[in-house]
Amino acid sequence: MEEIMSKHMANSVQGSGPGSSDTITLNRDTPIQHSAKDAASLGAEALAAGKFPLAISQYTKAIATHPQAVDYYIKRSTAYTRTSPSNQTSALADAEVAVVLAHNRGKRESIAQAQLRRGIALFGLQRYADAGKCFEWVKKMSPKEKSLLIWEAKVQSKLSGLESGDSKGEATVKEVPDADTEKAGAEAKKAETARASSEKAAAPKTSTPGLNSTTLATSPGKIRHDWYQSSDTVTISLLAKGVPKDRATVDIQPSSLSISFPLSTGADYDFSLEPLFAPIDPSASSHKIMSTKVEFVLKKATPGQKWHSLENPHGLPPPSNFTSAAPIPSAILNPKPAQDTPPAYPTSSRSGPKNWDKLAADLTKKPAQIGDRDATDNVEDDEEDTYIDDDDDGGDPANAFFKKIFKDADPDTKRAMMKSYQESNGTSLSTNWSEVGKGTVETSPPEGMVAKKWGE
Image 1 (cartoon, rainbow, N blue to C red):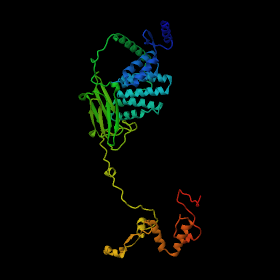
Image 2 (cartoon, rainbow, N blue to C red):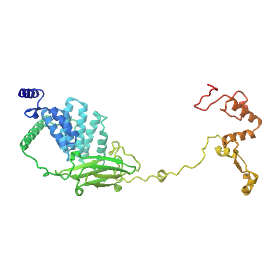
Image 3 (spheres, rainbow, N blue to C red):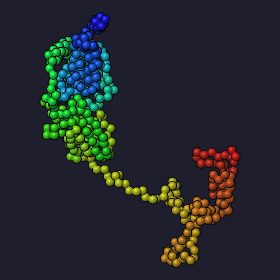
């Protein structure tokens, strides 16, 4: 029964799709054909996990059985770019095949993604003007591409530093390259055949642990970084174990940061940030290589500036002759406490604003007692009437102020004050009888309040 089911499964899979060249084993004795879609899924998982050599192998397997799939070439180009060391030549070749296939199918999204990978590979090959042209085509097809601003800024930074006549600044690429798609598919089949043969030949061999130990304890595909900031510095940690101190090269510039160190394979691992989000002071910045990580402490050129990311997606880096920004004035960093001065009220008086608080305080004081004259014998004549606090109103200077005005006012002023205060229900107080005497003074509550009768 098991034998019949195994044969049925093998026959159904072999006849279910357009080609398959590899086999996998579902149970011990039942090999079935492996589809391109399965290999592509494994490649996507490897790419997301940072296992770029495995991703390249799986996408090569998928391309061998499905050589017209645009996405497979785009993803393999991405893996070639991210390997350490990167293989920009192969990444460019895959990207150009993807551009041709995408144009043949007329898919704008695929064309944009293929041109983006093409531009990144050209940038890695130091063909900056060509990379810039590719990014222009990406912008035409997909203006909302998130990474486009960063790559455009990088291209402009490199082009601004080139001398006149440098070939790196001359654009020679065509929008649709002359890529041979059939040859690319044939090469994938050939590579997959060679891989399968080598795996078969090496299958009986067993590896001995420890013979191929690497100097770098962390796999290149698992190296990552994080960062945090204070008001004055930005601290970046490259999480890699066993970085050789004597063979690591660190370069800290006003607008960039890079580190390179060798791997056991003989290749170099490169990590760079360019342009940085904002200028830094290289002379005050530092780095430290530890057993578990490499730590960079970058001194901000402008203290207090908040970084939203490590790289600047919007602007160009500062010129090469950049110097540290001028220090923030001490008046801003150490402001003086506010003076205890009374508020100035608006006025139309020709003599300028009056200090009504002082006037109210003076009017609510009364002459000192005669027994206190000894303390004021030396006071000027115009200041002999020294005042002391009037506590008749419980210390309320406003009530005392108005009482003082009423006491010293003429009869018309007193009538105006009494009439306006009573008729307005305490919301208005006027000293102008010529206006108040014309009629009833309406209630005018403060802004935001409503006048109501008692009991409402």
